[in-house]
Image (cartoon, rainbow, N blue to C red; front, side):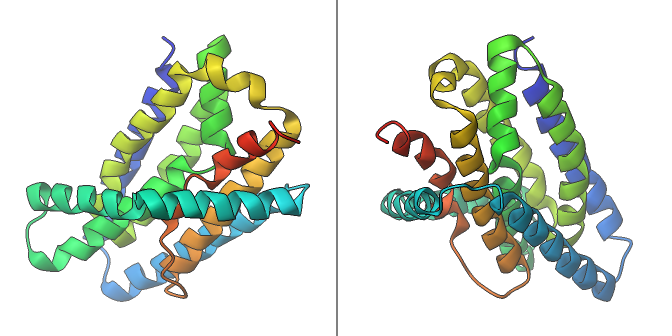
Length: 229
């Protein structure tokens, strides 16, 4: 099936988040806080590593700027946060859990959706039925969301549905997108996406309060830029 890779990735995110919640209830707050800080450092490392793949700094700067402007106009962060609040109202008990659920949903959605593996892997699934990249991503995401849900709670689980929608859409429209993805474009997509991931890491560490969702379109902007240069 054309969506096998997407389904595997979504299932891995769901399973990892449930395992994380299971382990969360068995650790005290000090352990959870330490793990959360460690998770922030790991996410920051992933972002820094990927950002080094960029070849044209001007393209990356333009991608972040244009993506941020469009994201702010649409206010993706607000829409996702409202969705998170709606989910919280239906599934969370206790007002003190609200912020954890919403932030967990937002942060995990950005971590599993932003990046070249999600885009390139989905394209390979849609174009040639090769799910290898998404299977590898599913394995990685399982452990990433396990750590995130152990610190941020059940809100992380609902990112499984977001990745199903996000990667599924790319798979279904793969034929339309693929002609515009040269190796150079993919490098800039990776760099821009990794900078967004760095912002997630800084937020998790409590250093910044960046509206990361409003930057989530930045990885797609290099596609448009290279159409004109």
